[in-house]
Image 1: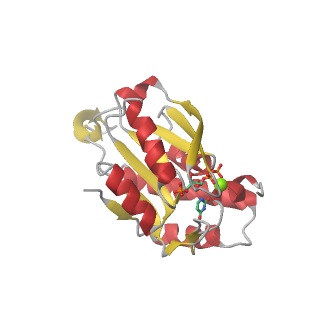
Image 2: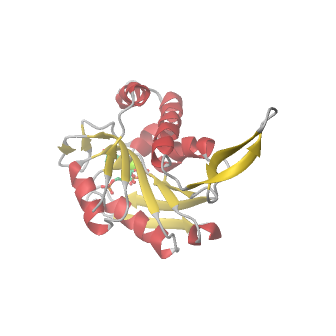
Image 3: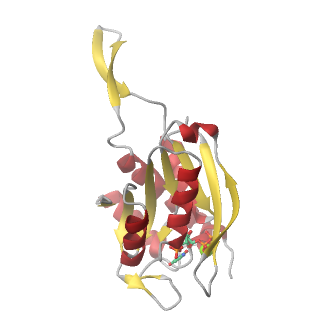
Length: 210
Ligand SMILES: O=P(O)(O)OC[C@H]1O[C@H](OP(=O)(O)OP(=O)(O)O)[C@H](O)[C@@H]1O
Ligand SMILES: O=c1cc[nH]c(=O)[nH]1
Ligand SMILES: [Mg+2]
């Protein structure tokens, strides 16, 4: 059964309000997306396994909690996931990075893949997937499938805005993958856009207009 984490944090909500605003320009949108990515990564990694290590402060020795395993692999779903993963890379600077290039057909709403690059560490470490929008869920299901096929033993999915339809589809296809989102929105419109949403995340991030 999938765990859905709608992250409740005053600083996250404040940034999401500005991210959603239609008047927010591209450079600011990218900056906000990265900051949101950092906050969500902190939440998604809250319970990473830790172990006790002996350390020495300037005053004495003590037992301290440290990570039990190397940092998980970070994977961006292109294009919009790049902006979100930027914050993940700040939180986990040692993490190897992978990319899944997917684009959704605007009529059929089906994703097609145009690239896949995965570091070898994906086979031994868990991975965190970044894509700001979980709309119909088609892209997320395909991206998770690719990372699993690459050998990831465990996965977390981080997004900014999720639609109920996308959560249901991703949960049904990959019930083992927890979802971390800043907001669970109302619905999809007839073009498959999340409502109220924030529009096309990739276009807003990189200043392109379809
Ligand atoms: O849940 P879905 O219905 O599959 O829609 C969500 C996908 O759509 C957007 O990408 P898009 O295809 O627009 O590519 P882009 O990031 O290059 O703009 C978004 O970043 C997701 O990947
Ligand atoms: O609302 C949406 C839906 C899919 N992709 C986006 O970028 N925005
Ligand atoms: Mg797009």
